[in-house]
Image (tube, rainbow, N blue to C red; front, side, top):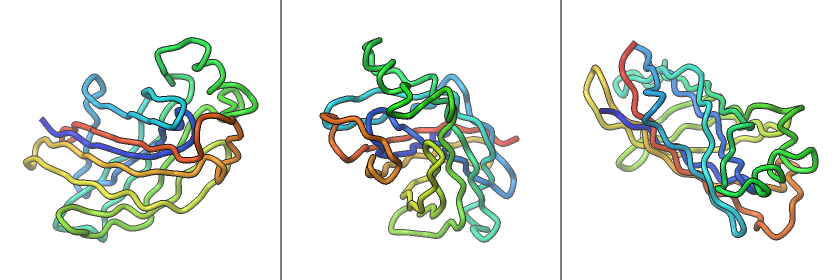
Length: 177
């Protein structure tokens, strides 16, 4: 089984991340097995609805690409009131901005894994981010794992008492398409 971990920190459940990986051969997310977790000083939880394109070949990084989204309406902190606050107009504004998206611009080797440079879009604001990740698996299946952090203020997420940094962790099992 392959897993992909994506970490993105964005205020209160940002979760991003819509992390899409492009694979020269192409990968499909195992929808029931992936995990996208987020945490801040005042909240933690998960986000679902991961969709997009994952094209990744560790031997052909020049053609590798991620273009993924997550569904903001699926944020789950374990508390209904916090979920409503996270999706509210004054924070993620889920009705107006229903997805968080990550589109890679370059994938390169880094240490014992890889680095995905790209644009993370939250609440209509796009900013460059670099997401370190690993990929373990075979030619038929594998897992991506990654972590990163974002500053909620960079994305106009104005809730107080949740801290400025949102940490995101991703584990995404995939199978070859």
